[in-house]
Image (tube, rainbow, N blue to C red; front, top):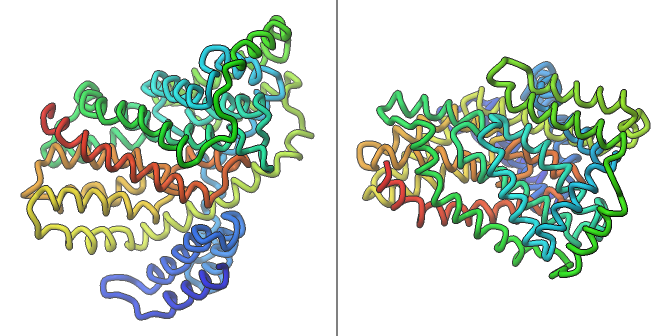
Length: 457
């Protein structure tokens, strides 16, 4: 499949350039498309596919080296890697095991119960976090500990016991909680501002009211759906709460390292929650947390040397982020949006509405940033829907889609990266089951969200 994907990329690369596009934009699309196809078909790992894409983009002259390597200097990518290392520190200290046992003692009768508890926790804390990437740094250590405590380890077959399922549920949780609250994802206020320019007024309260019913429906359905199609190999665990309570009793009071880790964790959560208000840089806060763990003896240089998965994550995501960003800069995204969207406007408004929403979701295969997608195409698709589709409905559904399509691919959102890099789930599994979860969300939001939003907005 690797050779097939390369062949498809070469054919596209050498094909005539469509009208309205530059040669560089078309050639970069060929490289990016072949990369995604390679991972989808299982031709190679996401890591190797990204490296080959970078080599092809530079050696063919499609991108100059400065542009090609720009992603490695982005602060939010470093935030992901540091949050990954902090998560390892939470596990090292024993605090992760304690948190895991606490959750198991309350909700651990089944993996499904744990999945719902993760989603409930995320939904509650989401409005205080304008960065879903930072919020992934809160959820990841908890999920990682739950997996480890149930004998599910990264990188081997035991990952299927419960770890792979919980990691995927956590990714879906971040997608849904980010759409539930106006303040839960950085792109949401930007979309509200763009909608206001076209006459649609959305505030914190109206956003929550419009998002609540379809989002809560999705929160109920998605863990169950993933349990059916991507099941953990352990089923009901009625004895787990009792065993977890016994383990907590055996652990006794918090150790020195646990207190250090808990204090650091609270500092990180508080700093990330307030970052947008007091002007702190979220990446610097993450580095502060890592430094505190190192000074407290919770995380060591040896641990850093053994964290090759963090380096791997940095490399593949930085590359794919750069390729997607350059596609947008070269005009490919707006060209594709206008091309596809324009073909959907000659129908009755319900059909135009559904087609535009589906196209808006599908085109996210080309993006590595939800914010970049929104800035490039939200206004375009909103304009294409006029004058037929009710404007408040179209605006709100596009804004919600900008959140729930974040599990479409491993790189569809920066908050996915820490989970994909954990070793519990593969890139191919995210393409398959993340795509299924996105399709399920799209169906739920169309069937439930459409009449609800028409009524409340």
